Length: 327
Image (cartoon, rainbow, N blue to C red; front, side, top):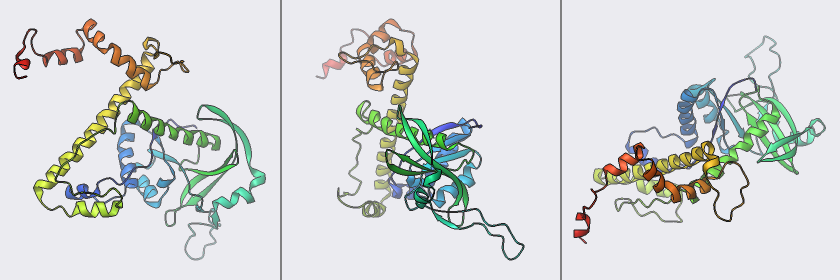
């Protein structure tokens, strides 16, 4: 690619409890803008990064926020909608009137027909398998009023057509296809977060929260939450939200620790019973199963570990049966 990047993988985020943010005086921003701002803060520590997003994020506010908060720090690889409209480069300025910012309007999807003879073929590693891809790439302007130059990559894989876009026009088309495939990793992470560490198994609630119907729309639920005016109820609701956020964040940390253990100590993690090993690196589920069976032995044989000392400091002295007196 010619440039050093970190890769930040993301996915679609829901609006969440926007009413609680308003109580705190936060700006009423879309989750697209919040995501870019959050990624910019992370990229300041990681360095130049590529943000892999789905098609929901290709919007004018995203490009505007990207330029304002992370210009030159973050590039985006995403998917364009099927009805995406772009613009060709403006015609040479003839010295009369305002200088043109854009050229002819183009329906990007039409290129599948009009440029069909210019598509190239390549073999690309996608989702762990080598696939044949037909693609066509062209740099065009996008975003009415913004006119940001994007590299559009039209792909045909097993007869299925897709349009990818990159804010970095120096990345090769085949590489853009490979990068976008990495976005699927977030779906795998959600599966492990849900099934292995029960990251969404929280049960925090408060009677102070208004009853929200299961089949009501998000707008109606937000409106009812916004009607809560009592400071005491608001504090209880905010504490509930903090508990939920904290639980999910700790679950993400736990998942990351399982992944690190699997990567660093792959040879020491025994596979689960009756399970054929398909990779040198064990899965998060395999590591979790191994740790459940062996963590107490580790505490016994490694008494100087910091976590062992912390656990012992909270244990009752040997022979102290005071906890059983109340039973």
